[in-house]
Image 1 (cartoon, one colour):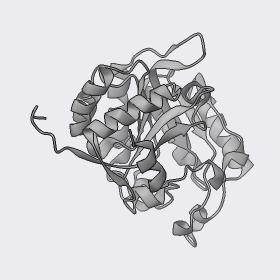
Image 2: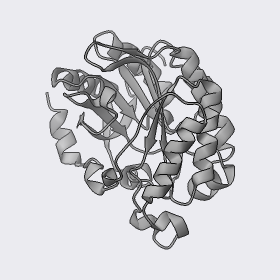
Image 3: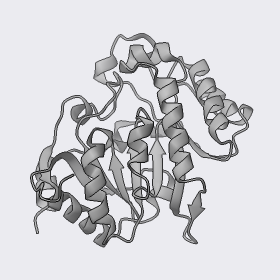
Image 4: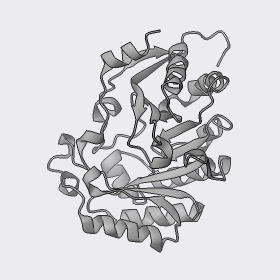
Length: 280
C-alpha cells in the first residue's frame, strides 16, 4: 500500500469483548473481537448471516480501526481477534504493521480457512494466532452448502502455511495462547464422514495441532426445509465427531456442550453501539 494512501476504508459490523471463544482465547477478560462485513464463503447455514451475506456494517478508516484495536486492549482484551478478515487481507497488511507498533496483545486471524497460500504468506510476522475453520473434507458438501470449489485442498494448504508460520503453540502462565494455531471444525448434522475426513486432514498437517470440535450448530431460517441442515445436531453425532478426533491420532483440543447450540452465543451487531465505541 502506498504511504500516501489515506483513503483506505473497512466495513466493520462489531468491535467488542467476546467471552465465548475457546478458553485460551477468551480468558477471563474477553477476546477483543472485530467483525468484518462480508465473507469469502457463502455458507447457507451461517449464524452471522446479516453481516456475511447481508453486508451489514459501518465504514471505518484505517486510523479508526487501529484506534478500535487500541481501545479494546485498554478495556482488557487479551488479544485482538479479527473475524472474517480474509477479503481485506491486502490492506490489512499495512494496518497491522501500524497496529503492532503499539499493541502488546496478540493478533488473532479468525477465518474460514478458504484462503490462498499467497495471502497467508503476506501475513508473515503480523499474526500471532491463526484460528481457521476447516469445514469440509467433502468437496460436494462444500459446493452444496458454501458454493466453494476445491475447499478441501485450498483449506488444507492454507492451514499448512499457517502452521509453518506458527509451528509452536505457546501459552502464558495465565493459560492464554500467545502464539500458535487452533483449527475449528463445526460439526454439521448428517455429515459424520465429512468430519472424519477433516480430522484426518488436520492430523496429516500436524497431529499435535489444537483442534476445536464445535457442537454449536443450530438451524437458521435460511436453511429451513434443507434436509439435515434444518435440524440440530444429535448427541450421538457429536460423540462420533469426538471419536473421529481420537481415531485420527489428534492429541490436543477443545470440545463443547451441545447446550451451546443456541442463538444467545451469537453477538449482537448493533451499529449505533459500534459508532459510540469509535468516538474519541
